[in-house]
Length: 420
Image (cartoon, rainbow, N blue to C red; front, side, top):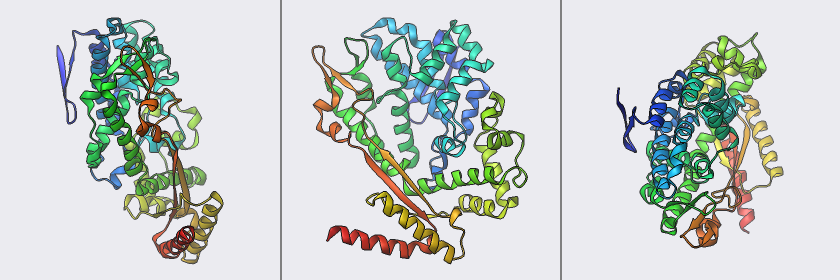
C-alpha cells in the first residue's frame, strides 16, 4: 500500500505516504496492538454520562495530534529546514503520547493511581511491537521518543514544544475535538492562524509572530472555558468520584469478596507488578465489564456504587469553593450525618472534591512573541493572558439527593451572610 487516508471529522483527510520514511513509521506504529487498543479508551472518560456525544477515543485524538504536528513542522521548516531530520521523532511522539493511558483516560489515572506519561515511555522502550519499528527507522529512536514523552528531553527545543508545551499539538487537538464531541460550540479555534504564526526564536525555541496574538488569546480563553464547563463540570466530578470509590472499595474488600479476572486482579491488588501485557489488557471494555459484574454479583456496598454509576443515578454536587477548608469539612460532616439519618451509607455517597486551575503558566514554558527584532513574553503584550495567570479553585461537596435541601439551605444562609 503506497498511502493510507484517515477521514477525520475535524481535520479532513489525513493522508500518510509509505514513500516518506517518517510517515511510513507512523503507519507501522498505528498498526500495532498497543496503538489499536486506544480505540477502546474513551477520550473524555465518563463525560458521556454528562455530554451524550462525548464518545470519541484516544485513537482518534492521537491521529489528530499527528496531523497537527506534521502541519506545524512544515511551518517551522520554512525557517529552519534541518528540523525535517526530527520528523520521525516528532511523528512517533505525537502518535504515542497517550499510548500509556489506562481505562477511561484521565479518570483511570485517578481510579488506579497511575501516570500515563510513565507508561507511554515504558511501552515505547520495552514493547517489541513499538520498539522494533522505531529502531528500524533509526537506532536510538525508541529511547529518544520515550525520553521526550516522559522527561521532555529533545535534541530540538522546538520539537519538544510541539509535543509538550502550553501551545502543543495535543492541546490544540483535544480542545477542538472535545468541544466538537460535547457540543460546546465556543470551543472553536482559529487553527490556521495559530499554525501560520508559529516561528522560531533566536535561541531555536518555539515562538509566535505577533500576527497570531489574538488567535492565541482566544485559544487560552477557550481552554479556560473548557475546563470550567466540561472537564470540571459538576456531574463529571461526581462520575469520577464514583469511579474512584468503586475501585478503592473493590481493593479494600479484597479478592476473597470481589470477583475479578486474572488481568483485573493484577490491576486491583498487585499494581506495582503489572507487566506490559497485563497493562495493555485493561481498557474501557474490561473495566466496564467488571463494573457490570459487581453491580449484579458484588458485595452489597459495591453493588450500590456501581448501580449509581451504570444506571446514572448520580449523586448531587454543591459548589463550596467560596468556603474555607474548615467550613467545607464541617459541611461534609453534616452531609454524612444527614445521609446516615436517611438510612444511607455516608461512605458511599458523601465526599469533597477540589482542584486548582490556571489558564496560563507564565513561568512554566511561557509563550513568547518574536517579530524578527524583539522577543517578548506573551503576558507582557496581553492583559487578557496576564489575567489568565491567576489560579482559580473549584470545590464541590458531593452528597445524595435526599439531603440536598437542608445542605443547600445552609449554603444559602452562608452566602447571604457573606453579602451582608
